[in-house]
Image (cartoon, rainbow, N blue to C red):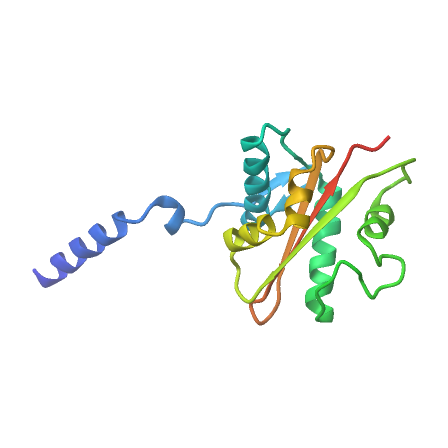
Length: 170
């Protein structure tokens, strides 16, 4: 009888959790690149902010995701937090975008937001970005049409995030 009540108690406890808190969601693929749930959540929150202000949704751009991930990874590995990389040739967000683009456009408008935290917390990151005038203006810039988010968690659990934005180029 004790075993049965323990099992019954476990089932009641187990059933009180939602499916999302028990079963991890699969990452999603966009244009050949797989995005993590954290990366997708940053995009979702940015697009929610834009929708609430009547702005067009940002489309996920696989190239921007890759560039953003590389910058987040570099910051984690080289222990810095800055829009300016110490690596020659990819020092600025525009440098990083142009280095990754297959061809140099005649013009491009690129924006970048960075977030760092001692734990993985997407909602905290989004709130921090929206509470900063400069970062909020990137999220809400009506000329931006594309977005890429790259997240990296280092061996100590520190969460590095780069959001990149792009206006349509030629």
